[in-house]
Length: 206
Image 1 (tube, rainbow, N blue to C red):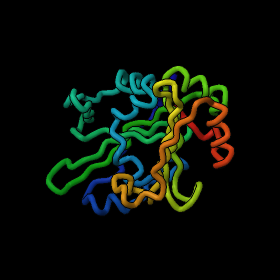
Image 2 (cartoon, rainbow, N blue to C red):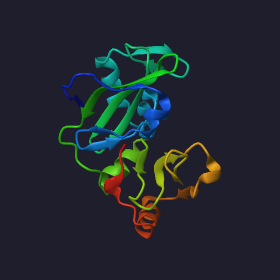
Image 3 (cartoon, one colour):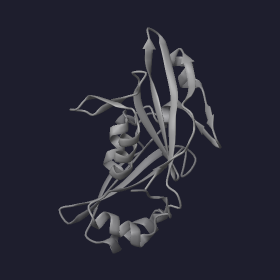
């Protein structure tokens, strides 16, 4: 189970949104930009890690403002977003606090104590249990683009989607360098695909 890092809520930015978009925030040994998590509303964490999502909701003072799309806001009335990096989940709140005045807070950091990296056996077990496994890579990790590889089980078929685009352009499909869907009959076929494309099980999360 994830645990909360005992840090105080930290204001990262107060001002014009254009300036916020250009800033790089140093948090520990990580350099993070607004676009890294801007399109990651907290509700999306439930899709890939419902256990962690439930713990964070239970122990945080976030309010659900719309049960239909599950929009969570902070005590300051800002939308809550998240960013997963390695074994940590960074929780941010961001939005327009007053006309033209945008605030960004680091609400907290959660981590997985002693969490082991994914391996082939664990990956197969996760997918067979109905969970999805995903691999998000950043610019220069595989090439000049960012990407998402996602694997799940559907109607007894193993489905893999692979999307890749310039950083921050995931909503403009015309800029995608990859937009692939693959179906496999078994994990041996998937394993061959991984080997052919130099994809490592250790890079995946669930």
